[in-house]
Length: 163
Image: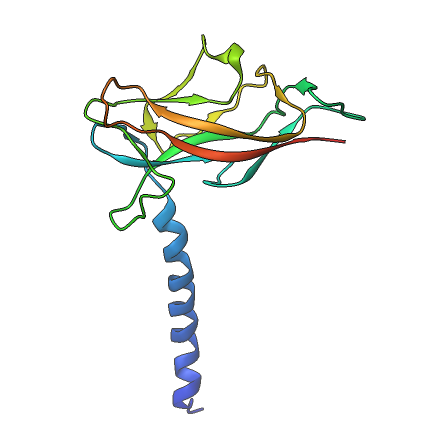
């Protein structure tokens, strides 16, 4: 009926392992917070900050220059950059930025720009946007600010037609 020291440590080791693996996931979660001046940020497309896919409603054979609409359920968002973050790929809100306009590369969405005002809040990519059925492009997250210090964050995307 006596347990060895090793047997008593197994539950403790399991608890430490669970806690350690949960920390990185919770560190990436950003509570909704207003976007403010003098802040570095990352742009996200479908949860990724770099080379990601936008799934397009383009069925059958695709020809050069063909356009279509994004499938529903895809998102964009911005998150604040950590203090120790590298400057590569970061945007900066500048001296007066309190919102960020998202340019999907669709000229028809310029008049009805997708504007984000909070970190950590996902916005749907409009299914009405007209984008290439295949190929590569960029989604640009541009601070809405007249400051010369503001700079955009860019996410490279691949447009992929769904069979």
